[in-house]
Image (tube, rainbow, N blue to C red; front, side, top):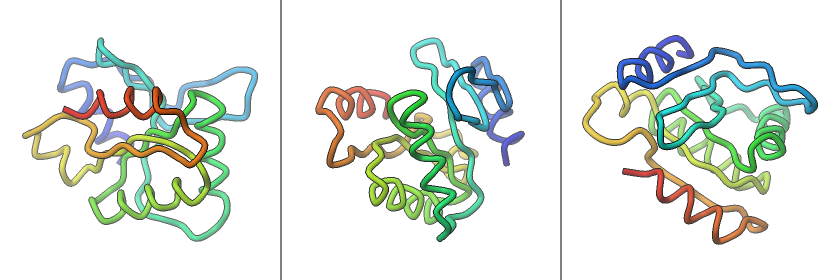
Amino acid sequence: MLLYTDRLARERGWQTVLTPRIEGISFHPDLWIDSGSWSMYVEVESRWRTEGKQWDKWHAAQRGQGFAAIIGRTDAVRDRLIQSCRSSGVSGIAADLETLRLRESGWWRKAWISAYGSVEMFEYLQSLIN
Protein backbone atom coordinates (compact mmCIF):
# COMPACT_ATOMS: atom_id res chain seq x y z
CA MET A 1 0.00 0.00 0.00
CA LEU A 2 2.82 2.37 0.84
CA LEU A 3 4.53 1.76 -2.49
CA TYR A 4 1.25 2.21 -4.36
CA THR A 5 0.57 5.49 -2.55
CA ASP A 6 4.10 6.61 -3.43
CA ARG A 7 3.50 5.67 -7.07
CA LEU A 8 0.20 7.57 -7.24
CA ALA A 9 1.88 10.68 -5.86
CA ARG A 10 4.83 10.40 -8.28
CA GLU A 11 2.45 9.93 -11.22
CA ARG A 12 1.08 13.37 -10.32
CA GLY A 13 4.62 14.75 -10.59
CA TRP A 14 5.10 15.12 -6.85
CA GLN A 15 8.22 14.43 -4.82
CA THR A 16 8.11 11.70 -2.20
CA VAL A 17 10.33 10.12 0.43
CA LEU A 18 9.51 6.69 1.82
CA THR A 19 9.84 6.31 5.60
CA PRO A 20 11.55 9.67 6.16
CA ARG A 21 13.66 10.22 9.27
CA ILE A 22 12.50 12.97 11.60
CA GLU A 23 15.13 14.07 14.10
CA GLY A 24 14.42 15.20 17.63
CA ILE A 25 10.96 13.72 18.22
CA SER A 26 9.50 10.25 18.27
CA PHE A 27 7.69 10.49 14.91
CA HIS A 28 8.17 7.83 12.23
CA PRO A 29 5.83 8.58 9.30
CA ASP A 30 5.35 6.23 6.37
CA LEU A 31 5.76 8.82 3.64
CA TRP A 32 6.54 12.46 2.91
CA ILE A 33 4.76 14.05 -0.08
CA ASP A 34 5.51 17.42 -1.66
CA SER A 35 2.96 18.51 -4.26
CA GLY A 36 4.54 21.92 -4.84
CA SER A 37 1.67 23.71 -3.12
CA TRP A 38 1.71 21.60 0.06
CA SER A 39 3.99 19.07 1.69
CA MET A 40 3.37 16.79 4.65
CA TYR A 41 4.14 13.55 6.39
CA VAL A 42 1.57 10.84 5.77
CA GLU A 43 0.51 7.62 7.49
CA VAL A 44 -0.71 4.85 5.16
CA GLU A 45 -3.01 2.41 6.95
CA SER A 46 -4.49 -0.87 5.74
CA ARG A 47 -6.96 -1.14 8.59
CA TRP A 48 -8.28 0.42 11.74
CA ARG A 49 -6.91 -1.08 14.94
CA THR A 50 -8.49 -1.08 18.37
CA GLU A 51 -5.16 -1.03 20.17
CA GLY A 52 -3.83 2.22 21.61
CA LYS A 53 -0.72 2.12 19.37
CA GLN A 54 -2.66 3.79 16.57
CA TRP A 55 -3.54 6.66 18.92
CA ASP A 56 0.19 6.95 19.65
CA LYS A 57 0.78 7.41 15.90
CA TRP A 58 -1.85 10.15 15.69
CA HIS A 59 -0.34 12.01 18.64
CA ALA A 60 3.16 11.67 17.18
CA ALA A 61 1.90 13.11 13.88
CA GLN A 62 0.31 16.01 15.73
CA ARG A 63 3.59 16.70 17.57
CA GLY A 64 5.54 16.40 14.31
CA GLN A 65 3.44 18.60 12.01
CA GLY A 66 0.41 19.82 13.93
CA PHE A 67 -2.09 17.33 12.45
CA ALA A 68 -2.40 13.77 11.12
CA ALA A 69 -2.44 13.05 7.38
CA ILE A 70 -3.85 9.59 6.74
CA ILE A 71 -4.45 7.43 3.71
CA GLY A 72 -6.64 4.38 4.29
CA ARG A 73 -7.06 1.35 2.07
CA THR A 74 -10.78 1.98 1.44
CA ASP A 75 -13.24 4.76 2.18
CA ALA A 76 -14.70 2.66 5.04
CA VAL A 77 -11.23 2.22 6.60
CA ARG A 78 -10.55 5.93 6.06
CA ASP A 79 -13.71 6.87 7.95
CA ARG A 80 -12.82 4.56 10.88
CA LEU A 81 -9.33 6.07 11.01
CA ILE A 82 -10.83 9.57 11.08
CA GLN A 83 -13.09 8.49 13.93
CA SER A 84 -10.04 7.18 15.80
CA CYS A 85 -8.19 10.47 15.30
CA ARG A 86 -11.15 12.49 16.51
CA SER A 87 -11.48 10.26 19.57
CA SER A 88 -7.81 10.78 20.38
CA GLY A 89 -8.13 14.57 20.04
CA VAL A 90 -6.08 14.92 16.85
CA SER A 91 -7.01 17.11 13.86
CA GLY A 92 -6.23 15.95 10.36
CA ILE A 93 -6.84 15.26 6.73
CA ALA A 94 -7.49 11.94 4.99
CA ALA A 95 -7.80 10.14 1.67
CA ASP A 96 -8.21 6.52 0.60
CA LEU A 97 -6.54 4.42 -2.09
CA GLU A 98 -9.89 3.19 -3.38
CA THR A 99 -10.71 6.75 -4.48
CA LEU A 100 -7.17 7.89 -5.35
CA ARG A 101 -6.67 5.07 -7.86
CA LEU A 102 -9.55 6.49 -9.94
CA ARG A 103 -7.55 9.75 -10.42
CA GLU A 104 -10.81 11.68 -10.92
CA SER A 105 -10.45 14.28 -8.19
CA GLY A 106 -8.00 15.90 -5.82
CA TRP A 107 -5.82 13.99 -3.41
CA TRP A 108 -7.42 14.76 -0.03
CA ARG A 109 -11.07 13.87 0.62
CA LYS A 110 -11.92 14.84 4.22
CA ALA A 111 -10.63 17.21 6.86
CA TRP A 112 -11.59 17.46 10.52
CA ILE A 113 -10.63 19.42 13.59
CA SER A 114 -10.26 18.14 17.13
CA ALA A 115 -11.93 19.81 20.08
CA TYR A 116 -8.60 21.52 20.81
CA GLY A 117 -7.78 22.45 17.20
CA SER A 118 -7.74 25.96 15.85
CA VAL A 119 -10.02 27.46 13.25
CA GLU A 120 -6.91 28.43 11.25
CA MET A 121 -5.76 24.79 11.15
CA PHE A 122 -9.18 23.64 9.97
CA GLU A 123 -9.26 26.32 7.26
CA TYR A 124 -5.80 25.25 6.08
CA LEU A 125 -6.77 21.56 5.95
CA GLN A 126 -10.04 22.39 4.17
CA SER A 127 -8.12 24.40 1.58
CA LEU A 128 -6.22 21.24 0.59
CA ILE A 129 -9.39 19.44 -0.50
CA ASN A 130 -9.98 20.04 -4.20
